[in-house]
Picture 1 (cartoon, rainbow, N blue to C red):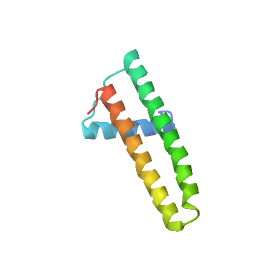
Picture 2 (picture 1 turned 90 degrees about the horizontal axis):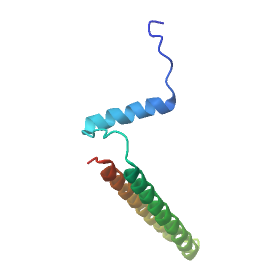
Picture 3 (picture 1 turned 90 degrees about the vertical axis):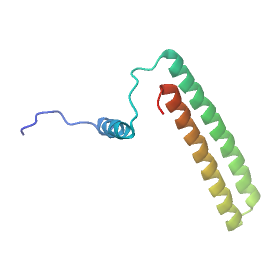
Picture 4 (picture 1 turned 120 degrees about the vertical axis):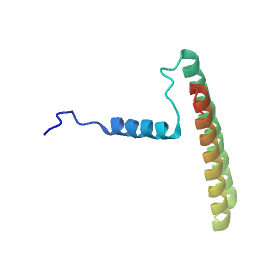
Amino acid sequence: MPDDKPLKSAFELAMERLEAKDREEGVEASGPLTEAQKDEIARLRRDATAKLAEMEILHRQNLAKAGGDPAELAKAEENYRVDRSRVEDRLETAIRKVRGGK
């Protein structure tokens, strides 16, 4: 083989793709995170996890209230999916801000 480089793990390949995507979008790596940034990101993740857990409980209650009605079940599932996506998007945006991204 002309290239005697070791094979890369799936993690390394995924990280390279993410870095390439960031470069295309104009996001620059800001270097290592400070302790304050790490603490803030951890807090944001804890808050999002708590919110998602609360939403899961409410979702289960809504499913129980639906009583097997397919239309009500579908509506509850869609609402849960949208709300969950919204929380996850907000988390990603907040983390990006803490890291100094756009």
